[in-house]
Image 1 (cartoon, helix red, strand yellow):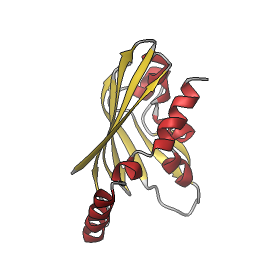
Image 2: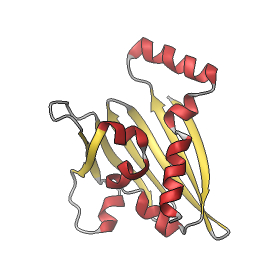
Image 3: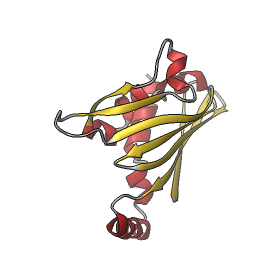
Image 4: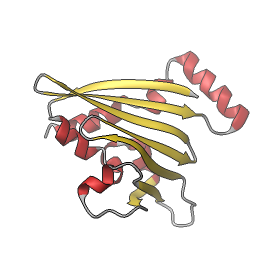
Length: 156
């Protein structure tokens, strides 16, 4: 399993940043999901906003094209309110996505970590090596544009 990590400082409290990490808000800032999905729907019971960010919460991505099968499934495996959340991603891609929030000055340092397994067997391993060699794997897994989207939404 490989790992990529990126951080960004945001002029918003950890509490405000935390709310943006709910699975059904991914499409607001994540261009990869937004390009393939029309929404993210919880498959676990959600009675309050806090339920969206608790361990065991699960969801799936709703494909833009109705005839496509579900490609993205999510399950929260770790949740420390306003500090850290990890969800397992399975389906088309597999891995763990972790968001770590640290107060800094008048804002928050948000660190995005992806522990991934490349799909597609041997072709996927070749693609991973090419991306690593070119230095673009980090940008493929955690695009700077997504971090800027995340930051700009929270700093409005």
